[in-house]
Image 1 (cartoon, rainbow over the protein chains, first blue to last red):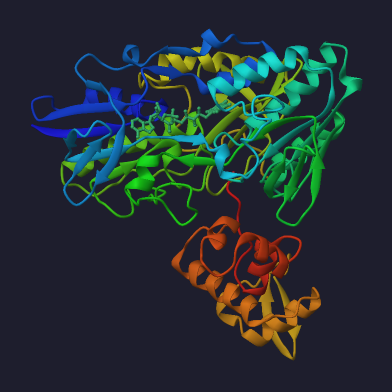
Image 2: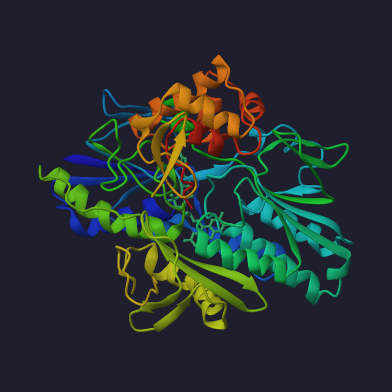
Length: 412
Length: 103
Ligand SMILES: Cc1cc2nc3c(=O)[nH]c(=O)nc-3n(C[C@H](O)[C@H](O)[C@H](O)COP(=O)(O)OP(=O)(O)OC[C@H]3O[C@@H](n4cnc5c(N)ncnc54)[C@H](O)[C@@H]3O)c2cc1C
């Protein structure tokens, strides 16, 4: 028997286990998937926890539930990949050989990368919301916070779900307004990018939303350190921003196993050099990379992982049959953006095409407004949780095309 | 497309002033472009520009962090060498395209 080994049973790994199980010859192939954690977190739900919109228990389910019975699922932590001998060494010293390896170990915040971020004020006046722990702690802090300077800061440009910090900011504005204390809170969005977002058309809309909501944007601010005594953020070129409450999106890093195996790219963030069309690792032909673990120039998002999974299934089937890798990923990303007060917007883009206005066709549901702020997009965002647990993870087809479509988009 | 004429040689640039063909770049051109933004290029600046050109040729997606890990300068010095937006400015002076930040 040959073995396909999947490292990481998060969004991408779980989808791949389901898809491969349906498509591989079980007499020839055994699928093994390992994860260090028993629990699957619905990470997009972390956004809503600080504001009490979701309860912590709404976003966790056992991983086992989403992995087919016939797949060998083990709780263990991969410590090192030995690419020369096609082996993965686990934290407990055991070894797993593979014929084909899929790396789906994702990315997590690494606040320790920035001086002073994980200091005395951590989880007192400085929080992240990209982890279950951070989102839950922040919810408690917001409940009793009396107001002052709320600063949202991105420590790096390469982060997962690049729209989540914007959504957090919009929801914070609505939260304090609804609490009747918006006049006591100054909201400042401090980013290393040159505007609220990267691509021109979406940035224009988002910058407008920021000013409508009286949120100050500080662009081109690359965080060097946090001074806990003075409560200020300091950039590499010595700009300073004071805060009373800091919501940080720390540097995001790929897993330790990537570093230990010397597989990361030159950013030093443990993201793996990956062919942006075939999803094959650039250095080893029997290793494929999917989801947040890659260094692809597109968003690190669950929707992206979903589109990649369709492509990767095809390419792995080709690979094991000795065929050329024909399926090509186009960088397709599709993200609902919460804008507060029960409204949202939607962006759809790929490597080449920036988010454009127009309509987005959802088969069977009807068109949604692109770069428009409306109630339907908010409902779409909330519906994503159901879709995630019931369709996406288990590898069912979604009513959205894998490669980006120009249908409905206005180009002029 | 526009052209930039410095020292009597014309090079093709895009609307934002980035060279459209990195092979038209010369160190002299870099010096003249730098003077326009009040930067006097030292050997350290040129080490950075040459590194950027080399990585561009290799097809590497450039970032401030990668430069910080290159062993040429740390991030703080990079900001001092090219104040404002160090990666954007140095890329322009290196004759390579404006670094695309991916979403
Ligand atoms: C606040 C927030 C909001 C978001 N909102 C959205 C959204 O609205 N829409 C959207 O599409 N996406 C959103 N995302 C992004 C989305 O959650 C991720 O892009 C997606 O989960 C990536 O899937 P993945 O499988 O690559 O990584 P993950 O789902 O993070 O899975 C990685 C898995 O690997 C395991 N692992 C890591 N290292 C090891 C090891 N050494 N050994 C064993 N196991 C290991 C981990 O335990 C984990 O289970 C959001 C993320 C956050 C944090």
